[in-house]
Length: 482
Length: 99
Image (cartoon, rainbow over all chains, first blue to last red; front, side, top):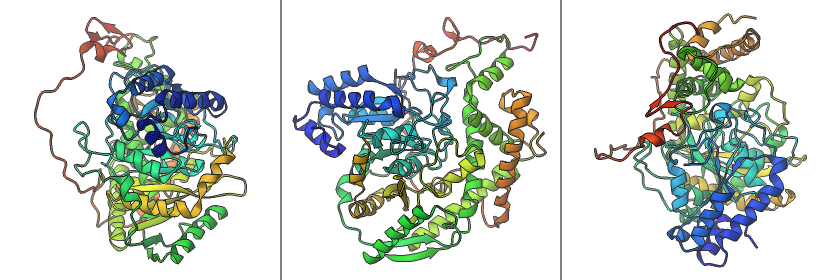
């Protein structure tokens, strides 16, 4: 019997009660069974995963690792040496990276088995995986709904138990929003906590790699493995990595909670609001102290994000020119035309939209009015966070204004951007934030709660999340996914 | 509808993209709407702030020791090249001429 918890699974493999090979075979079978419908994976690494498992069973040192024999799915914008990495884009459709992302190296060293690469919105630009150049992923709770995005493939795979753990990346909510839509725990770590080396850059000042799991404990375990300084990413912090798994079970010494005052909760889905208020009431009974936080900059966070992220993207994506790797339009015999045709054919509509928006915001005559203003707004957001987090330990919001929506429901790009209203601020400020499932709608879709904490206070987030997880008992809901 | 705010032809030239007339027609009003929406940033008083291009994470970021390390070999670096000539990436004609 394969246990549900990754912590337990790794323990059984370390003690020899389970063989890595049978675990991998179980999940490969599960993927074959489920993924025709869900389409969470772009690439399944059957051969490589089995080889890795056999090496572990033969006694490779990683068998004593924290993730011994645990299959992990990796979002397809994180490079894997020799395994195709597409970013769900035509422009990288046949890209086989000659190097490994730091997080993947760390996973392997801890004994984890890379079982496949998951679908996403092209270059992580989107909130539904509908922007994947290949196919959309479905939400396992309701196949007519999106799994969220951009880490939608990772979220769907974990929720449907195709894999115990997955990595996503979060630039404006791309781990937390799909976690909320698929009933998972999803963490965006502090900026600098996890190395971005090998994460294909979208917006470098906002991007962080984060775990998607079915329990807080598994989330703490995976974070522990991937966190830490990396000399190949100069923005990683030389901050020691705590033993998250041990710290998780320790009691919270202080429970001061900030709630954003004003109109932020107006207009959100009534069931999301009810679930949120239920948690607040529970915490009140647990003795939490509440404080209303004036956050004048929250309302401009989204427009600020939608200037900064596309600006950085327009610069980062300039590297796709058809010269060194990726797709090239071979029909042109002049350099400039080759660049233009390659990029025009290689990128999908949302990526082009954002490149154009970012190029405009950075162009002569407009830079100050758009990018300059947005970076000042970002400063204000960071300042408001810093003063709020002096008064409270946590800030709580719903993760998303509504549960998972149906395919095609947000054809207008601006409507799609509004899905990120609660999540972008943590990226702009750099602080960590976690989403945990706290309820279900009448229609059977999960609802997420977001907990934001201070820089490098992931342990605190896990503790509060762990406390709420025990109260909510969401785990039994997964049985509804066949 | 052509965009009143964004000169699409100019921006596409900067971004090395070529859009068809149909794509431009579709994109222009979308971008117009997004740019209008983005302008609400100006509603908030930003005078006491400065530009922040990166998060204000307060941590030491020491430099690594200046020691030579191995890097990609030529074959590895060229392994994904769309076109190569011996040890070089091959590109089409660089000097402007007839296409």
